[in-house]
Length: 414
Image (cartoon, rainbow, N blue to C red):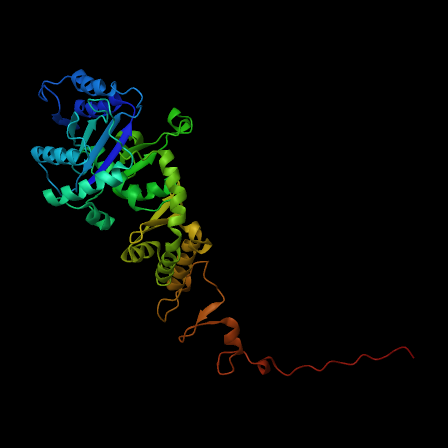
């Protein structure tokens, strides 16, 4: 279980967040602690006024809103009654047992989770301190609840490899689009080290998702907005986009830009090992397809970037083991698209020009050195053939006849 606590100054804002989810069938109010009416009978204002009534008893405290979430492992299937029991026990252990609070079960992510809205102002006007509540109070409570209810421990989940998690390419229409996009985006942004939006998209596209800033003329672009789309197998956007700010982890452009700078530092230790893998595969590959397939066996995915005309202008390397991505030019000039393609084309040309021990001059591409010929013992330069004294076909100096003597000029100046 993972517990997150957010404090703020707007009770109506926290309440609206959850109530809007209820309106779109993405959440359900499952319990209301400290309320006289039943859950079904509560109106929006019943829920709000119970909290604001307490908050107004201490007008000096501006931070009077507490918005919590309890998140469970993707493989855990918890009934509503069990979620309420876990929430009640958690609130008791962190000192909010006698506070009014609302428990919402959410359905908009790939894992089970609940949200709890309450206030830290008590009936006597005193406030419950939120200073270091996460480390000093919430963490021990979380650990105790994991044991008591037999939940997957957060430490076990943290140590699990990302590729073992249940994230699969999004199939539009097969599942809730927002839930699928949220699950994929959260996992990719947390696990991989990328340094630009195109690099992030190179990874997201593997899961049929893309991040979009909008056109340069759009209002969204000018304000630094970001949306996430589902895409089909051709990379075309489908469905309705989801704003980054509406995803719980809020992977906005501003947050990502901070991550870009951090990841640029974090991925450096893995650069040389990736180059070594590429060098090993390039030495035995004669086509781009073979190059990609061999690297895939080494857990490195090659993303080929093409322009509108279909011409290749870049390569990106996604290291699935170390969760990094590098553009070819970032690794060095020898790993750029141009260098890799030239190297593969040359080896392919030589392979075609010299298949085994037979010469196929008519199929020899122009890129093959025409000064090379085949003798049945390997490829030698023309100069080596001419100078080889053991070659019966070599032209010897005396084959041109005796060397003419140079006549002396007479001196006519007597």
